[in-house]
Image 1 (cartoon, helix red, strand yellow):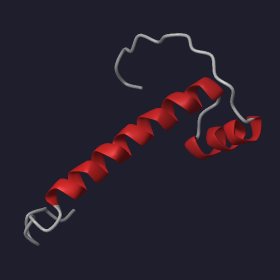
Image 2: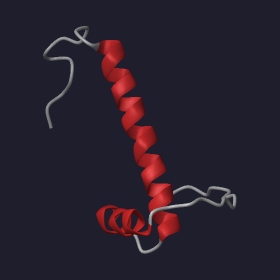
Image 3: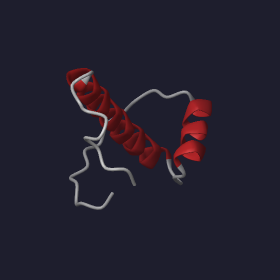
Length: 67
């Protein structure tokens, strides 16, 4: 997390095995970091798919630069 964020304490019930898998997959050391990273990923993907739905069939083939 590159920017300063005000964190708020919350209490959740979480499957311990799912939390362990999330920590491993997301490459973080704590369950709290895994939850924050997972939430950020969900928001990023939702934003992407919303963009894709809005622009479906509207972009020209050469509209995006190739890397």
